[in-house]
Length: 303
Image (cartoon, rainbow, N blue to C red; front, side, top):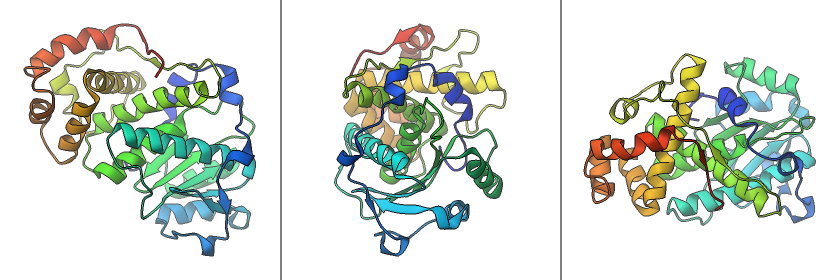
């Protein structure tokens, strides 16, 4: 998420989406290209003050390693290697779909992987982070709890990694609804795809927006902050995901253009006209098609 906005509420919303088998399965660690190194030998040592707060939790227990695109800070190999496998997969498919070059970054992103509740709670307190949070994206870093005792791991990694990818390729100017909607869409879609490619019956589902909570597109895309009430937060994530899904399904190339324009400060109406102008005559034309789509029950088809 942008800055310190976190993911607790939507994890409750999406926890039921995938089969137990897909969630608890672990990849063969021998196939994971995570190379453990002393911190001093990592190719990228640049971490933020928040990263320093993380490493201050049981400082002698941390291990460090890296893959082609990420640096990892973790406690056990059994947790870090499956995370590394997923992270490289998500980076490749998400960046590729957004029409960005998936060659190696000059600077690697950093993933801090917590396990035990006590460590995670200590970090959140020290960092001034909401106590109900389960994962955070902050610029070039991701902080994530991956509880080894929990059967269900969830798609928090895919969600937060989407934010990191958007930050690296499009900068910090992507509007709130678009950033969160894209992260929700890619997280549910590619998390299911990751496990389906390994032989499991996992399929993404999209949460519909109730007619009572639906917000007109012009008003919705003007929001500058998250809603406060829990029900409104759930509706915000649902509508943002549906709008991104709707635009992307209309034309992926045009959506990539739209995202680029929005990241550079274009108004919604202007970006829509320059990218989807031949698809939707204006915002009212988009609204006419999108509103019933946002409100209907929907199960995505496999990738």
